[in-house]
Image (cartoon, rainbow, N blue to C red; front, side, top):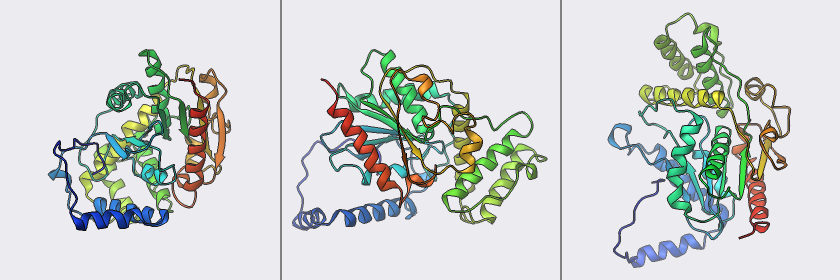
Length: 343
């Protein structure tokens, strides 16, 4: 549903009923259109008609809005691998703004992705978006890990001899992640980190300490963790355990890629959109850079990095009631970048 697909070559004619429905939708107020779009997404995600074992893995390129005359915006996935928050963000961008996203995990999928460093992922994603961009200018950005991926992609675009993005957008994306997996009990600490992030999305707190897991073998640690997130109602009690294992593996591999990434220098324009509230996980994982407004990126950028604080913390800045401000700020920076560009 969300992936770019080929269209049939034969022209399609709307029936009278379809034409009336199209006209009614076009006449809806913007807010009702947003509500309708969310209900359609929820039906596709939660309706149960698509089972993980009954479908092939979706393309990593996700078309959120393909229409519009502005340069396309490409948003890279955060550490969980999915891109659902970008659908909501796109609702608060200009209707004339094309928006695409790149994912490396689809919610509910059983597919487990092997570890890949940031540089490898960036090269792979550049190959994916190149046919969409062609010779046009574009914007690159992302939330959390997505900003790191976008930064490396922008560097590789320049190395390949292409133009830099009109603007590189870092949505609360730090230049440095602190390792959470030292030799003593590292896997347990990664599981607890995942649990805390999942819980925060539900407005809860994951209470199991890493020490409760560390005396088990890794397979049993994973089992105990899954039972804990179900028991604490962070995920549904009947959640598909194979899908949870795949999601956890994706999270851990993506997290390790972020920790091991060493940015090089970039010559293009960069803006950092920072969450105005700092949660505990952000402090712990970005020691040394979270107090820097630029989140550590100025050391790797030739131009002055622009910074703007927006409401919310690292997780909730992507959701209502905070995301409208984030969307407006993002669109403002993109429009200013295109206004100042020379072609």
